[in-house]
Length: 272
Image 1: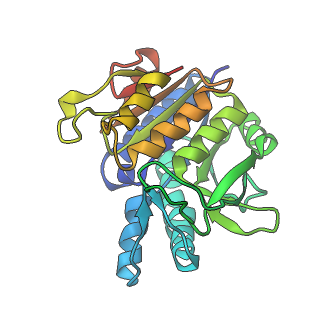
Image 2 (image 1 turned 45 degrees about the horizontal axis):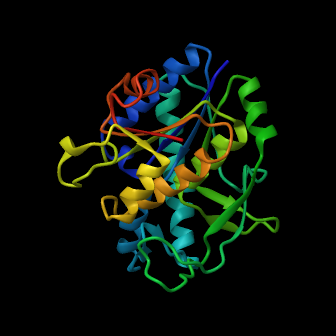
């Protein structure tokens, strides 16, 4: 029985793609696959921050998280979007269970120390209440799988004292995928894959090796939020377990299966 992890960005909640993800998840479950979903919520968090008079701070595609920003992430990611995704999955015939790092440390983390990041300049950046993942509660997720449920994990982790920490959803997805040794990770985002020209969807790169991905970051082909997406995916592929990471966007029902069965046919497939 194969395992599949699907990660969706906040952009997916804004259109019809949410129903496509739900339909493909239901199809995979009916075919006997074990599926886990991870989601972010960047656009929605930014919108609520602005509505509350906060000024979002993003460096190198990564959100700086103070206490007020963390409250927004709890409300948006741990609350509304997690419930919206579970609702869509339920309507498609799936049995979802919503989780965060506060759920028996489904995702465990420690506070990230200041560090230099790609796209952030030469000085170390203090990202505030942002976590580095130290563990995944695999037994909890596998218990849900064994009972026929689909875990739906928000991109919030917790440390040993219960402090909630914001974590990039791609990192959460890749680390859960590594711990559970899933066969494929599918990252559903707002972009139709990695593009040579961000303004030209026809410039999609169907396949990238790790060396090619590093070169694309170094020469400026990849910018903004796609940088951490590629970096975290590369880190997981360098380990063991995951064979491919698929970056797709603007999907229709059936596209997730197509990305797996025909790597590179849509989006960008990242391989070792």
